[in-house]
Length: 140
Picture (spheres, one colour):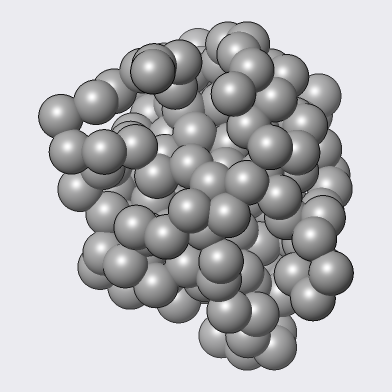
């Protein structure tokens, strides 16, 4: 049973996001901890939480179309905090290990909800909502 669960989890995660590397993001609002569920991220939004399963504080980029390459910038307070993410927009969103869209990345599919892999916990420093029709985190 455990083996089946792990296999299904791997399949679900693989279909929701991909991991890669690149170099080359979106201002959001911080909302105090509240309902602690995936439902906090509304249609069209891109969200991160500092705990697994949409728990803890939430970072909500409403409409997921803004570009801020650096979560470590003064006033954001979200550098290296994300543990779970939801992309409720119609576009792919890429989260990057380093600021300014640098280093390794995880691509989150539209309407995807995931707990980040262990190696990615508290590592996200920048992100980008991809233009309509683009699904690759690396493009000019």
